Image (tube, rainbow, N blue to C red; front, side, top):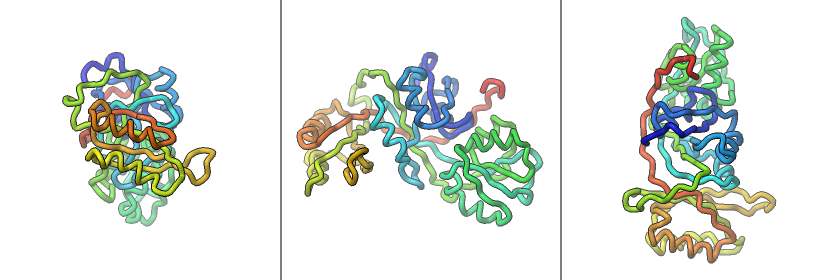
Length: 296
């Protein structure tokens, strides 16, 4: 992106989190970022104007969807304006001088531990311990000074907290990407759909619980040759065994086939919410930003 002077981006976790790397990959390395303790706080910070934007992980190529954030997107009055797919490289991080054979505890967020099971299983003397976030595990390791522990996190976290990477790229599958969405509460004027291609539109909708309802809802896109990219079902609060569907399809809402598909869907659905139309994100490699430590 261009000018970032007035942009403040909320992300979940501590400095050095993969979400912060995604924010800097999207907006530029000098963008102002604000850590949030959890996703609820992230969405609230953007909705209440404390931050102009949020960077939200929504799906991992190995672990699947982050369901909590689908629910937040449905519940909050924010719109998606962009996305990117960040390569996730996990590293075994230790206090300086700690050796592999010294490690008895490995700390990280549950998804990170699940993505590194082959490596952690090879350390038969060590147990894995779940934490709230990856970079937070590195920060706690630094504070404790532990000589029998390690954390799994980004190379950025190792830099930020002056710790050592004992082994890099320990994820089971190196084709490991997390898709992040950029959300904002501001009304953004739509770009020229021709310029914005390839575009994606995200919506959430619900249908009456009757035979053929889901088939009819998907047919509004098939009739117009619109490519569906993803569909996710989530329970409807207060209505046991009824569901809302989050759906991504190719195209911009201001292109006629897309607009007509949404118009048709509104005629048969109980509700439709457009979450955003935006350029499909690129796959990017996260870069370590060697900032001054006292700037965090």
